[in-house]
Amino acid sequence: MSRLGDEILSSIIGDIYDCALSPEGWTGVMTRITSTIDAAYTTIALTSVTDSRGRFAAQSPWDAEQLRALQDYELDAIPGLRAAVIGDIDLPQRTLSLVSEGELEQSAFFQEWAKPQGLREACTTKFVHTADRIGLFSTTTWANRPPISAEEQRFLALLSPHLRRASLIGDLLDQTRVTTGMYRGVLDSLAVPVILTGADGAVLHANAHAAKLLDERILLRSRNGVLQAQTPMVSRALLEAIGAAAHADALLGSRGIGLPISTPGQSPAVAYILPLSEGTARAALGLHALPCSYQPPFRLRLRQKRC
Image (cartoon, rainbow, N blue to C red; front, top):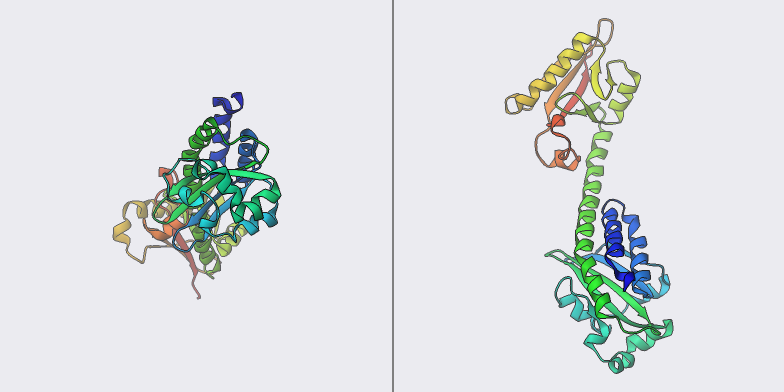
């Protein structure tokens, strides 16, 4: 069938990988698969095994109330579902290949839920099964169409590995965004200005107080994205101090480098340059994937001295 050809397969796979960065795209992918298979609707869900918490879920347009009612059914109450859950990964399991049409029609699930909506069978694929995650992808058909064909099952099987990669990447990125937000929130709550820079002085992040300082251009400023002081001499000393810290991480200890950055007539101010080590905080701030010229990042803390 041309509708299941390589071109449409490649196009849907491309859309799947877009969802790793843009999770809102999953609805569109499910809708495309539904249309391609000539089904009623399609769902996808990634769930935590330990606490049954949903990592993410999406579906093509369908009655939301009916989908909520579906969650009330136990695993064994839905014909064929357990076989998909405990079966092999990337292997689409068609309901009517697991139970007869008569058994399906006699089930309470079919009579109460599927039949009133004009539905027939589902084809469910386990696309993720790790120590802490399980993912199911399911397409449900209309009652007035033939059973899902071997070609359609093959098509769904070819999508499964790509669904796995995209969903796990997206789940990892989502966790990283949450952790990053927590660490940045802590930085922004500090009363002292804190600026994170690369080894070349490129500004990577400034907390709220530091951003105000840079905007006011009194003690420090950002020029073409690089941290600068008020005078060329102090700017040069500042960048040299950051560069020195890049090559003497272990020798600096917790005190770092203290550099006077105020000019005559101003309240004395000192910038402390401290390396941000290759640890949890650095990774959580999302700085581990920056270009090499930006590594390692530094924490530059300012303190004004009272005369």
